[in-house]
Image 1: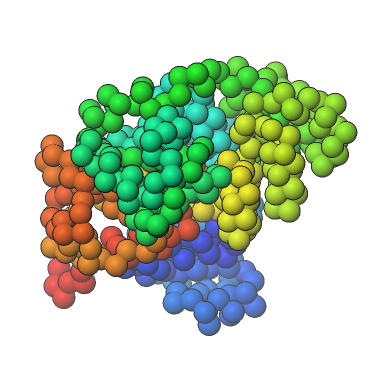
Image 2: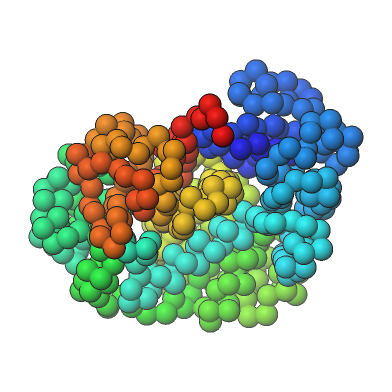
Length: 456
């Protein structure tokens, strides 16, 4: 597939990193000639230094021959113009990053008027993932995901205390006769995708992720989810009133939660106060412990740190956790910081770039990917069809040499759900369910490769 990307920022480069695992011809366009020259020496893509708004440049690269055009520059208006131009010049599918809330109110109008097939918004995606996490956690069937006949259930091990102290391999032996397979474990907010950590010991308060036939999992969900924690989330404090903070506050106020935003910029506070009806906006420094205490931080059900600085989000998340807040969530842009923060007991660390890049790549995969859901902001629960020509057909799962962050959790063959063993052979037409860390999306693309054909 031929794909052009305008904008060599974090999102554009992350999309390229993932797509390079598959069979794609990629062209990257950016105005920064020095940056383009550096990237051309390190990445196996075609690089073009220039303005993607220029029709002559797009025609010069043969834009009509491309299957997808993705524009991820730093300005919404620029992405709209570039996307529209590419569409008018004959690109079948255009994806544009648009972040401004004012534009997002006119989502469908923008798509129809400017010929943009799909709009991505990392800030809104982060807010949606946080909202989904909080609302599902506080509902009786929290953590239940479906993919065809396969279901995945997340539950606290304290609901099945006999598993505490066991190794993962021992727990798997107990669950398998019940028709369930242990696929992942969350320790102090850090999600570990199995099967590479069989020697890991299950501890109190760990969360387990099991998969199985939908009817079986649905039938056991109520007994494994703590009903005593089933309640509406009522009080949420958000540090940072940027776009992510705005979207999150808006979603939570629609749900009926009491929301407080702490934002240091006075003009931004005025904007938030004008556009959010039932949200308390506080002008102040979220790192000021006196301010946090005066606003009853200890009484919050959840604390979400969404400032523009990773170091500040890390500090605030740890501070909130020290104060005993049950759910603490932080936005982290650096991958190394995400590892650090989840290892310290913070419940959820989200990287907007990873989340949005995964969304874009799944859309490009089209019919192959039947559904994809983000899990705890760190992994994907992917349901796909094994199509003709894929390199995995006829191979045993044990011979695929899967990386530690990716596991095949189930196969659906017709109406039958198969919990795979190492000897299980993948067949054309199977519906495969995969659990993959977002950081390992490159390896997922490699797994889904199609054999090269000499003739059409």
